[in-house]
Length: 282
Image 1 (tube, rainbow, N blue to C red):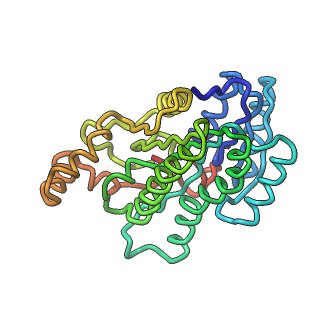
Image 2: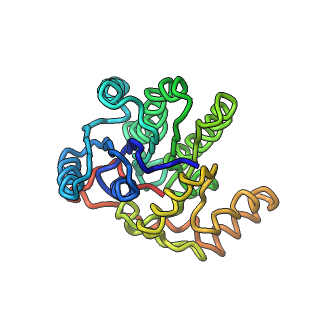
Image 3: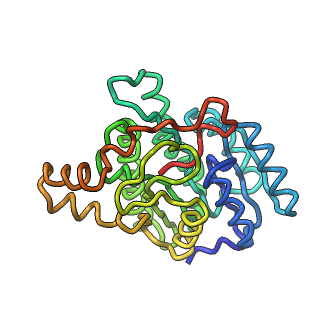
């Protein structure tokens, strides 16, 4: 089992959404300290003040995880002060909800830089020290979008398919390296944090409440679970896609369950929302 108590936990996108909530819960579970990386200075300041008022040890860094130089500099600072974290949660992510034909190249590059390269860069910065220590637990927040296609999510889905494949491959590599090097991959559906404002919940797929999914994630970490899919119906997606002809699956997912129209009314967070772009994702 992975012990959150007496551990150092680093969370990207940790100044809002489920990232912030996971940080709070880790401290409540007895983590020595939480290290918060985020791009939003206001969110970082608020998080620091809230956690500090509760007499918890928290340290914050303003980092664009899509920038290799920033990641390396922040990681060197972390390791010089605290060593590599026992638990690394790659939570930061962004989404642009519109048809692929309407995407700009800047939007495509930014989505891939943050969602895919960001998680890889942060992990790569700390993994050698974890391997040398012989222990460490990496948590990658992917998405149910990594398990099926969805209109108006083409670039986001592509990034999450990449995260899932990388995360599972990394898990196998680390299992061959040492018994105490763990990877947990999380594939939740839509989460009620505001990032996916306007989406319509597919049939039998309720929009997840932050309190519920964060508790499930931390329990999965403590139990060294390989995969966490939420809600339960997400567990059926690989099976259904495997046994059903593609057109039949499209009918089931699209027409019956309404997955393919769930993003039709997507608005996301309004521009004035002070929360950062690197936050919760499904």
